[in-house]
Image: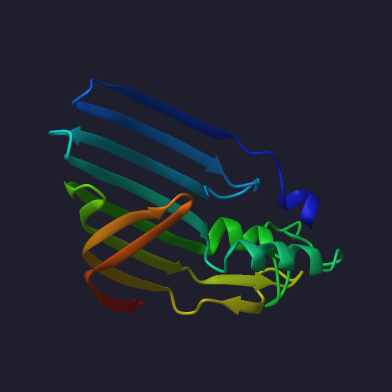
Length: 238
C-alpha cells in the first residue's frame, strides 16, 4: 500500500538577515521560517520551525569589548501516533490482499496494519519545543599580552509532547464484524520537560614572545556550570 499512502508535499523556507553598525557597535539580525508537509496523502502531518538570532558587538575602548548573542527557535513536529518510520514499514509489509476498505465502506486489514486508517483515524504525536539561548563575552586587555575574558551564558528549553491515541477497528468482509482493534480505550498522554542551563567562565591569558618564532601562552581561570530539568507528565483514558 506504499503507492496509495505516499504522495507529494510542499515546503516553504524563508529567511531574512540585516547587518549594520559602525566602529563602536556592529550587529547582525536574522530570522527564518520553515514549513514541510508530510509525504502522506492522508492526514495533516508535518514540521514547522521559526528561528531568530541577534549578534551585537560593542567596542567601548581600544581595550574593552563586549559581544552579546541571543537566539530563539520554536519547532513543531506533528507525526502519526506510531511515528514516521513505523507507518512506512507497515505500508511495505501490508499484504496486498488486505483491502484498505471493503465494498461496504468498513475499514479492512488486521491488527498489524491498515496504514491508511492509521493516518486518518489513529491520532497524532505532537512535539513542540521552544529554545532560548543567551550569552555575553567581555574582553579586557589589561596590559601587553595580558587579557581577561569573562563569558556568561545559558539556555532555557521547554519541550511539550502530546500523544493522542484514538481507537480504531478493523472489520471483516461481513459488515459490522470486528477482526482487529488498536488503541482501545482512547487515551491522551502529555509530557512537559523544562531544562535550564547556566554557564560562567572567567580566565586570564598571558602571551609572551621570548625568542623569534617562539611564543608562550599561559592561561588560568574559573568556571561554573549548572543544569537542571523538571518533568511533568499525565495520562487520560476514556
